[in-house]
Image (tube, rainbow, N blue to C red):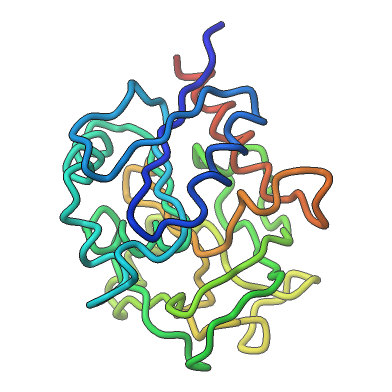
Amino acid sequence: MSKICYNVITFPGSNCDHDAFWIAKLHNAKSELIWHKDDELKNPDVVIIPGGFSYGDYLRCGAIAKFSSIMKTVVDFADKGGLVIGICNGFQILTETQLLPGTLLMNNTLHFICQHQYVKVENNNTPFTNKYNESEVLDIPIAHKEGNYFIDEPGLKKLRENNQIVFRYCDENGQINNESNPNGSVYNIAGIVNEKGNVLGMMPHPERAAETILSSHRGAGVFESINNWVYENL
C-alpha cells in the first residue's frame, strides 16, 4: 500500500510548517513542503495550511495569504473534494478564501494566549475525527491572538443544523461554558468543517500534541483519522 502524501504550504511568516511536515512523516506518510509562490501541488492526499503569521498578519490575518499563487490551486483541490486542514493561521486563511464560513477576530482579552486547552469532539464523523469518540475531551494547545471565532446568528444556525461544528472549547470534565472559553469564540467554537466535510479549520494545534514524548499527544487522532479515511477511500 502506497503512503499517504501530505502537502504543507509555507508562507512568509509560517512557523508551524515544519512541525506539520514532521508529524505527517511520523504517522507513516510522505510529506512535501510547498512554497506559497508555487502554482502546483505535489500529488497530495491532504493539504495542510499551517499556523504562524503569514505575511506578518499585516492588514488582517490571512488576508494577504489568500492571494498567494498556491491558494488558487488549494481552493480548486478542495472544491474537487480533496482534504484540507487549516490550523490556527491556516484556519484564518481558510475563512479569508471562503472555503469556510465566519471569521477570526481579536481575542476578547486582547492578549496573545499560549496554553494547554481542553476541547470537546462535537462531530466524530469526519475525515479528521473518525478515530475519536463523540464528546471525547482532548488536551490540545492553543497559541493565538486572533482566535475569537465569529459568525452571525443565521450562520451559526446553519453550522449547527449541518453538524459542521467539530470542536468546542471546554474544561477537563467536558463542561462548555464561558469560563472554559479562552478567547470569546461564538458558541465556544474551536473548529469547523465545510458543508461537504472535506475542509477543516481549527485554532488548537494538533501537530503540537501528536507525539508520546510530549505532555499531551491527544492531537495525534487528527492525523490517525485522516490516514484512516484516506486508506478507506482509496
